[in-house]
Structures are given as C-alpha cells and as structure tokens.
Image (cartoon, rainbow, N blue to C red):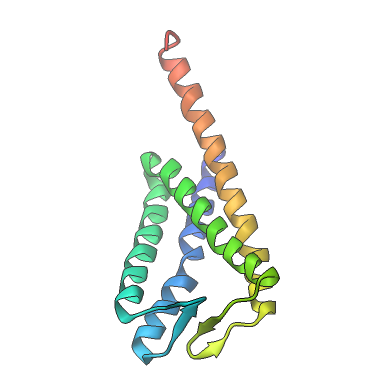
Amino acid sequence: MRESWLRTFFAVAACSWMPHWSCHYYRLETGSSFVVGSWEFSRLDSVVSLLVYSALIAINLAAIAKLRWRLPATLVSGLLHLMIGSLHALRLFEPFRFEVFGYTWSRAASLREAIIVLPFGLLSLWVARLLKQEVLNYHQDVDPGR
C-alpha cells in the first residue's frame, strides 16, 4: 500500500473522532444533556468518553508514523465506527430517545451520521485487511519456513 495514502488515512481517522470528543467536551462545559435511549450520560460518563476518544485520536496519530500501531488503529476505529453507525441506523427503524445538548437529535441527522460513519468503518476494516496481508507477506519473505 502507498505510504502517503496510509498517512492521510490515519490523519483522517484521527480527525473522525474529534466531533465525538468535542460533543462530550462541550456537554461538560455547558452542563447540557446527552441521552441515548435510556442512558442519560453523567459527567463521569462524558469524562470517560473524552478519555476513550482521546485514546482513539492518539492511536491514529501514532499510526501515521509507527507501523506497529496501524493494524490495531484500523481494527478499533473500524469496529467502533460500525457500532456508532449501526446505532444511528437502528434509530431510523426503531426510534429511541437521542438528545444532544438538550435538543432532540433528528432522524435525518441519524441518517446523515449513518451514511458517513458506516462506510468509514467498512473502509477502516478493509485497510486493516490489507495491512494484515502485507504483514503476512513480509513475514513469508523474511522467513519462508513460517
């Protein structure tokens, strides 16, 4: 895979977590609500979310330059994007309460989120598959007896 493309991919992947991070940051700063179904996020829930999103941003930034972080970054980002996108897609068929900053998140917004997040999750897993294949090919070239 082309190195320049991979570096760009991981930079975009790091950026993809910023809206989620900033949502919890803003929520904490304003004391506004964040509700998904029956789960009303507490301040601690949002602090933990900030830490998780910070870790996701960091691992993707590290993956720009560090090869060993690339496969874990693509797998985790891919799976979590698919989870978030699936949550929004589910909401289109089985509406449930979704509130951000004290406002109801519309079904149209969930549709847009699913349209953006699900393909990026699939792209991330596709990149993970290509990276895994490159690693396997490298080990076969270095140690053909493996």
